[in-house]
Image (spheres, rainbow, N blue to C red):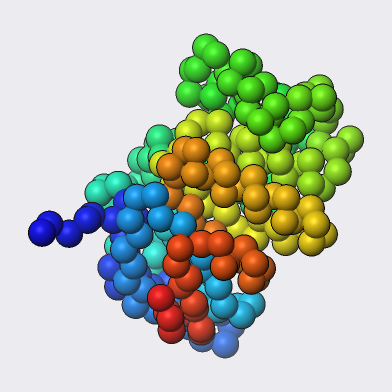
Length: 226
């Protein structure tokens, strides 16, 4: 029976940086196979390398050694333009700090990735997804006029509007109270199921990690449990 290829794979992935005290090894010898449609939680103590790993998997950073492949294409062999094109084609992001553009309305923030790809139906698609996350009454509000939970719902809509094959989420409930965070978790998994997206998230939230199909635990830059 043939093996199922991973939509995200790493081979001997390592990341080190030079500091005033010498070389700091952030990640060492990370081997991963993440299948299409899987939901993965990356957990571990602060400083264990979680955010560095997600940045390498998404092609936002480059490793010191080893390889990352997305959808069978070697990300680590590409230049920055190639990695950016790959992200635009395959990837969505949700961050702890929301990362919304302050000068744009909720609708404009969600429209932006579609407009960048030349989608003529950007406005209708963005409005439909904002309605889906319960924000049809807030389309014309800028981020500073929205609560934290509302801002994260806009960020979710923006992440899913391009129907990405892979969604990376870095502490998506980190800035929210527990009730709002629980609502965001529900929305994240509902949208994930509807879109059959591969979900890779970094979290300290045990309830969020428990909703994922698999947990990868990092300790001092190494995988200690998968």
